[in-house]
Length: 405
Image (cartoon, rainbow, N blue to C red; front, side, top):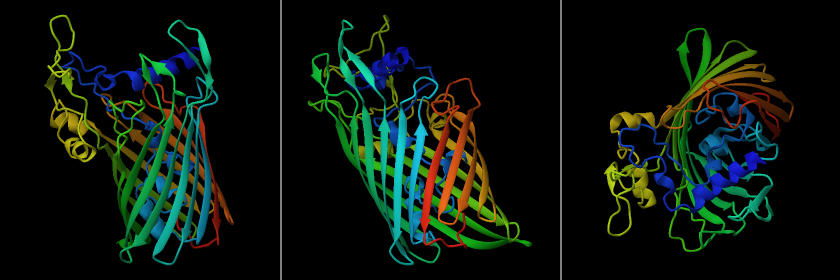
């Protein structure tokens, strides 16, 4: 119950506090801890077991049915005519047992140059007991969020592909309860993704065939989201830039190994430092907004916010560089039947401090496949995925024995 209370308190604080984005930045001009927060953060949870075993990287890994999340342009190079996948990710399993992310994806290859795909992402926060200010119960509710995606990927040449995705986002976290006289509502948004993917066989190594690939993917370019009927406060969704590369080496007829590297950056304004008086209270402008001591106003339009995110950090260039996180991973396949994976994810300690090692395995037999991953934190801060298994069940119809993973 304590975990439930803390979770509910966090939801109320974030979605009803008009100054939620300023939290931790009042009077902290010398503080380096400015974590960028957005609405619907479930959109940033890696959903599948394969990428989960490679440090949560996948913008340029070989195409598979779950490419929608990492870079949908990869679908243009997928071998099988059709594919379907179901993935399950437990969340905060050390605290509660009914918070999870479910992910379903599907693709269909129209011809040798075009592929369409769709996915459904559903995040459940379990059963929560709501209470009023006096602690009296108001009933129970299961907060939930989901996103429905559709993608179109097309080869522009024999080596390069482009994709465009559309997304509808729905977030219902408070069941319409009122806090401070403000009535809540479900938040909705629409967004698009744009992806590029390039791959080519190369002869860089004398005794081994090899393939090099790179990818660029900008996800969640979309409207802000509001959780109250007045629409006075709207929050950014997690617009994200992902850039990466992959190198695959065919060691012999049965063994191959791949190495991948991803870099991510949220294209969302950095919270500024707000001025305070001698008592530690915020200094307010005549229009009621806070006076900014350092940094830039985050209350801007979506496109301006994406551009501003490259130069608005109060700490200057050093802090801007801290906003990049990295993922490295490796994948070994034996005869396209069995895979072993490992990876590492790094995020600066001032921007969230997510740092962890991942391990994973994969199995393929005929049209069926299974992927599992396990996460091990390397810092003292707890991770919502530690001590849990993510898994994906895959079906590749029209199985092609020459498929490359």
